[in-house]
Length: 465
Image (cartoon, rainbow, N blue to C red; front, side, top):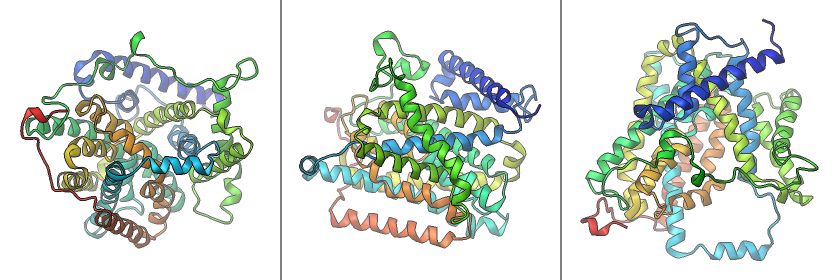
């Protein structure tokens, strides 16, 4: 069938049906509930099983393999709104905000930031070094292959959809997306299953300060449905629905940079050949944000609504990414995939149990299990694991992580320049900058005296908070 708008909606309908079925299965099957697997990922597995590499019952159009990259452009357009302020702040207000963070609170926030930066860098660079300088001797890896490990673990399916699109554009390696989605899927499964195992061990060894035995999350986390008394507003109404629907208003803010990116990327690449579409969309969104701020319209944009639009795009991105994985490609690179995944996991665990207690003091496990989830899947995985060990948010992990997210230089560097450098032969440049950032992180920790005497476990249950 020739590709058309009808074919697009048929693909989206099939995806929607499978996501619905997956969500219902997740709400009913206890084994799956206990793994906390996201419904879109489970739906992707269903699509993979029913597709050409499974029972060959379900097919998508020949354009479906590109949907993940398209949804990624939407996601990056939305990310900009969460990264930058939409309203003007006066200088006195900024000074007051800075004054509120002093002493131990500031040290606590910086310690988590430094720890997360170090772990993120390590999960990126160690597999790259092992892949390029060791595995390449036995099996030649395509250019850009090794950054997909860190992209999949630290960033997830969305990040690797972006990375693989850049790699395909710069190297012509058409199977990059299959490997990228595989690493991201492995990361999420290791994050969830490995995280739950670690929590069970940690409670037995008295590493936890808010629970003394492993207990699963509330029912809503298992079933995926919220009862009436648990529901919260989806977003805030900032424009009158008589004039324009509030969701449409915020959707416009995402679609303008998305559409402009596709419309102008051809002209941009005449000057900068390797600029990815998602990066260009991000930059256009930043420009739009500045216009909204200057015109005082930014206060009418609801960041929560933008986040929901981004998350919706991510759900479909994950589905199409996983459902479209070519099993033959995964089998071809099975050895390096397994080895590099193990290398990334071991690197993460080593730093978790050696560095985290020195930087995060008494609540080191609660804070490090959040970073573990964050660095093996996505923010939601870290949040899920944190909710188990710190159900009442007493460790202030979420607040501290949120405060430093806008200045996550490691994330910005890897997202915006990482795949470009790694797919154009500038491996040493990428590694060099990452090693400099790693060194600076350790120097900051020493200069600001963020180190603590390791305090692995509580002595008695009386220390429980």
